[in-house]
Image (tube, rainbow, N blue to C red; front, side):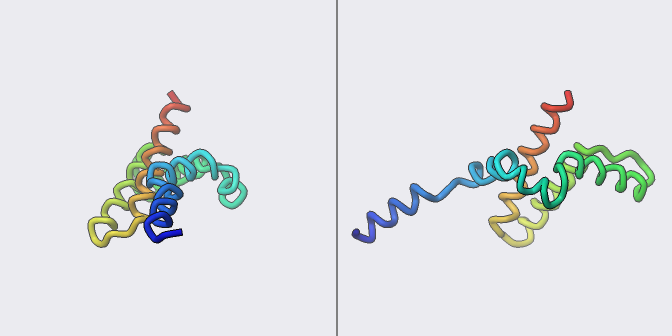
Length: 102
C-alpha cells in the first residue's frame, strides 16, 4: 500500500470525539458500573456529599455542570484531548440524566 492509502484508511478508522463520547456514555456503561457502580447513582451520591460540605443543596445536574466546567477550565490552561472528550461525555451524560428524570 502507498502512504496515501494508509493515511486514508487510518482516517476512516479514527473516531470523532463525539463517537468516542457516545461509547463512554452508552456503550461502556456496564464496564464502568462493574468498577464504580452506576454512573447516575454516583453523581447523585456526589451531590449529597457536596451538599453537606458546602452547606447548601447541590443537585446531580449541578455535579455534571461542575465537572464540565472543570474539564473546560483545564482545557483553558493546556490542551489535552482527554479534557474535551470528558467534557463532551459529561454533556451527553447530563442530557441522558435529564431525559431519564423528567
